[in-house]
Length: 100
Length: 475
Image (cartoon, rainbow over all chains, first blue to last red):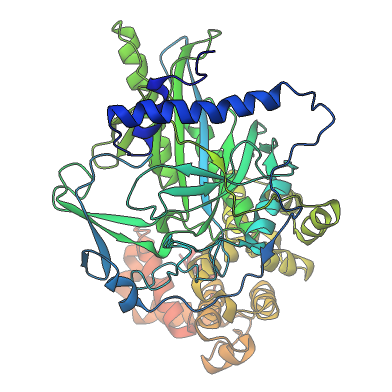
């Protein structure tokens, strides 16, 4: 049976995730990810009409906190993490496109 | 603006409003505009590894309040990660509601009677703020950018309208009415100039009766004026292009306020792929009926209802008066106006003083009690204060609070005895024979001279019309 996933699908997803994959890695991940999808197809073959979709393994809903201010991090410590900073802000290289 | 014959524009709006919470959406950092850069940040809103988001209950309730006011169905909802790489999003994803928004459907009725459908109003987090250095201050040509994450994680509600809007003026009316609702629900301060409301407009054109045309999205309009101008420009641009035999390309466009034009920002070559998937660190949000009822019960009346209530109290609603009513509703001054009318102040007077004097002093409105407002207007109505004096008293009350009777007494604002104006006019005529003879010969401008003199001698107590009547009587 052919893989449910095409090599170009894996290359596309890698591009979206900004991952650079070698030709050999593309082959490997096409096969491995294909196996994951095969497994999902096995599930599709079952009659699950009576099973409620499970969104989360915990049976919790509406987990919220009160709207109360808590201390933020020290500004100097935050900026010490920045590879580059200017005027108390993170400095980043030229951005090539507008935000989505 | 009217479009050329046979053409119609189709507009849908996405309005992003920052919610007026104390803290951010998923962490306890302060949600405050104008703080020093990167001072309201923590591991969660900086996207540091291992940090876990916890939903702010107030953000949820404000979103539900907006949905309730827009007649939406409050629905079981979930959160997704919208993945993209951009420096204003340190996690490399934005948490947003996707296929299951908290508010589904709904509508907003506009003052002109038209109805705009609402598709959804969902929760999402705001991004950080980038400043581009070098070039024109926009991205293109900038050398590098600086990022402040104070805004990162601030709760937003995005309200998406149906493609029901048919003119730029209607788009403006929609946003103005929506802004009133956001203020009335306490969800937003409505300060568009501070970016607390940002609008994207989807604009397409078609010949009447034809299927929808290709749309362009104009991003980040942040005033009613920009919104209206940008939509008008864009519709005309598309019509011109089609008339010349061109084709509309689906794209994102930027509005340039100075040039008054839109220009290409980003072409959508294929559907954007953000690899949306469920945010595994957040569980479902399923407000039960009791919670929904509590939010609904806490809501005050919306602008449409308040406008109708106040308008109904007017004897003869002129356009000017209705315009003033709109200012009163927009600034939330109807409590003062209704209180004054209840105390037998003429509605026209109450509305005029609120729409002018109170509107001008809106920043210090807390200094003015309803009782002082009513007292001042009652004194004006009975003649104890002239209009000029009443305005002076209101300004002082707004500036530093106090008792209107004390203020009037301190300033020497006393009611004129009957006949006092006539006596003063007679004295002035004697003292200014040249002016008087020119007035008698028909130079009406001299009336202002005499009124000014009378006002000076009466500390503004005299009524200008009474002065003119006295002058006329002696002419």
